[in-house]
Image 1 (cartoon, helix red, strand yellow):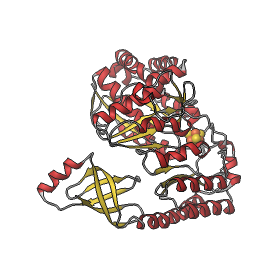
Image 2 (cartoon, rainbow, N blue to C red):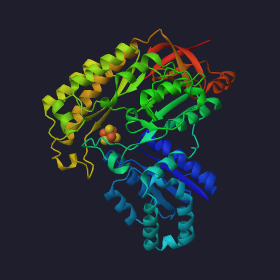
Image 3 (cartoon, protein in one colour):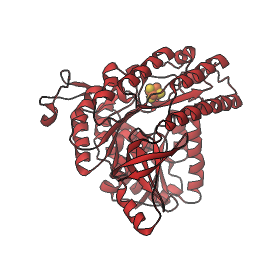
Image 4 (cartoon, rainbow, N blue to C red):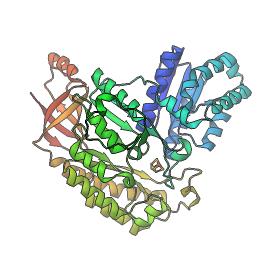
Length: 471
Ligand code: SF4
């Protein structure tokens, strides 16, 4: 049996897909196949933005065509979208039920086999969908079980390691607390063991994941004894916060990079900021979502910080480590965002000088608090505002990159084409590494993928670096 898995959205969804692939291949013996040939299609969805949902629906219609594969939807799906999907006679499975997917899929295939489905076995699909939701009753143990499934990593040098999932923050525009549920943090011992095993296997880059990664708060009765003894780590009785987890992971021997995505400003504690100075493996990169520079809009977004507090946090991060590169998320055109509010966002962007910003035009997500507010900024004005911020970003990113000219940066090689190799520098920037184009060099380049090299930066644009390999 063959499957095709399409993933949308954030790294958390990509990480979930690595677990889905492991379950399908190890427990069901399925093989990956192209979309137009696979017997089972799985869409791992993202409902954070309407545009992502629309893209999936467009793709879905195209994919389905005249074929009748079994189609499964999972990921962050809001209730109205779930209903829409079920009406199309597709299975909606909760990611938390992943340990039970083999059972559900086997049952579905047995009931329907593809022919039955063709004739439209809505009753069966609905029944199976309902059965699937029954597995979710014990939320905590379901999440624990799904996160402890060993993933089929898609890279042999970069590993995503989810340490928590869900969110308690209820930002007024966001669907995540409704689709992923409340926060759950994995036990620290489980994370430490997973990361230690990855480093032993030769992984070079560990990306810790969570919807709100820095609110991590895991409980454990035991820590691996090698890490517990004698370390200057302050852990309460059984509880481990995010900075403590970073310090524990930092003690794992080996040459590797550690980073995390994505953080909420309200949980960026002084202890965590200090990690940028003291943790040897933590790379100088921080993604911290600003969302708006207007306190009125931040309040309406239910973000629990002010623009002044955000600026102060960045000052402290830069004092701890001046090399930290910063990226952020910003939403333009939130309900009632005036020109003055928008100019506050533009001003803070100029002041902080981000290296990267993921800019989004606001779109309401059904069921969220903000969806009840009037979406009163026109699409054209939202685009104008986004373009203005993009120009500011271009200027600051270019100025930041120019400072790297002539510097030699440790770089992880991630891919190659016929002539060059491409990497990610220690501060999370993309770099094209120029090498000579001959057959032998191409073979040598291939050997460098997944390795650390030193690169001298010779040219920059706002979005990319270029450099030479230093022997
Ligand atoms: S912190 Fe806010 S934006 Fe991030 S996942 Fe939670 S509710 Fe959504």
